[in-house]
Amino acid sequence: MSVPLTYPGVYIEEIPSGVRTITGVATSIAAFIGSALRGEENEPILVQSFSEYTRNFGNLSRNHPMGFAISQFFLNGGRDALIVRVSNGGAAATLLSGTLNLIAASSGDWGENLLVTITHPDSIINPDAAANEIFSLIITDSASGAVETFNNISALEDNSRYITTILEQQSKLVRVNGVMANTRPAEEINAPFNNDGDDGVAITDDEVSHPDRVDERAGIWALEKADLFNLLCIPPFELETGDINSQTRSAAAAYCLDRRAIYVVDPLRDWDEHADITDPATGLDSVTWGLSRNPNTAVYFPRVIQPNPLQEGRLAEFVPCGVIAGIISRTDANRGVWKAPAGLDATLKGVSALSVKLTDGNNGVLNPLAVNCLRSFPVNGRVVWGSRTLAGADQLSSEWKYLPVRRTALFIEESLYRGTQWVVFEPNDEPLWAQIRLNIGAFMQNMFRQGAFQGSSPRDAYFVKCDSESTTQTDIDNGIVNIVVGFAPLKPAEFVVIKLQQITSQT
Image 1: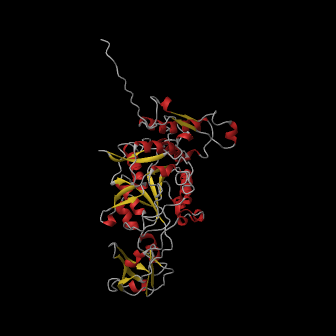
Image 2: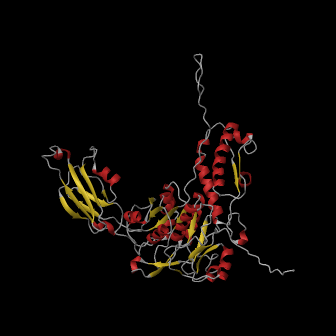
Image 3: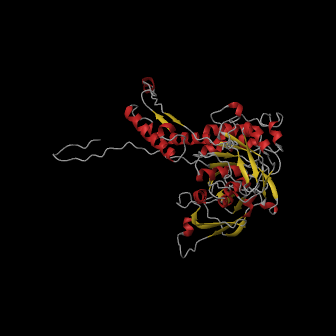
């Protein structure tokens, strides 16, 4: 808006530059879905270390394999993990002490370790304590050693320190069970919770991917409550037996396609050799597999063998999804989303062996089928030796053949989707189009300078088109602005050919 001209003189007016910086989104937030010893259910909780995971969801347990995958994720370079805990028939431990009725904050046997201490403030120090129903509450988890103290809380609903609200917002251990009585509870010293906590039975695919879970925003669809995730891992529900079934695989792949994320698919337990994958009865074309060639999925083979901390470090077999997600996160941090998370730098940390030792010949059979192999090499150890999406089989000739190309496109899509929200309801004409070209062009130029695209110049690497050709008068009349963005992706050097020729001296 121009400055009102009211007197003779010089006026200063600041003109907006029209620059609205587009910030690239995170690229390696990994979501894990499975059971755990404790923790809020069907809520995506962000953790940034394995110790933070154990504080919120409990230690490793053979009945809850998700914990092993998360441990492997952080060991291999993972930084951000969204945890969705799912249970099947679990119950929370409870305590009834006079007028105080408490329940553990989440289901599981862990709640039976809780102890409650209730104290009343000294009426001489605080003469209004009795009238205001003030008391203090100490919750102790005797198993983990966690202690929560809440001083000067009240049983009265109109008190600013109302116990129900305080526990809901500040406690990770307990909640008020039902409606709090308007009477201060009697003093207690380490009153134990009842033995009615229950972990429930092992979760099944129905708890994770049944269609009923969509409206409940539970299981896979609990991630609707999360702002962003880039990788999805669903380890098997039992450590030593079984797999997730085709219902869960299909639902996870479809959901990742909607959310611009990558589903890291584990191999089936019965794949004991590479021939099992090519067999129509047991492999990628089998009814058991049941997963379409989705460009937002990537499958890895074989499983990994690692020390099991619950078995005195003896070796055990695990699915590789946690390891792979960690390597992807590490590669993104070190090189960028456009670098294939494979090669000699993509070492499998903490992995002692692989369940199947693949040869070059085996790899040559699986790679054209878009199965990413894990290989063991002398000196270099165990590494990821493939970087294709499941749509990357040679016969499909998909433009999304390579995982880094697909992930780069998803990164650009998500970043531009979030970075152009300001465009909505702006006047749809050339000044707006010029701003769009400026802002998106600056974002793409920054990626080009980081080495994300092919080409020796920006003209060769990308383009941004938003003008009267892309947005016609009919589009304007319908309230539409069309933005066309193109880029020349970097593709991994999957095959390195060295040609040797013998020459004969002519002298």
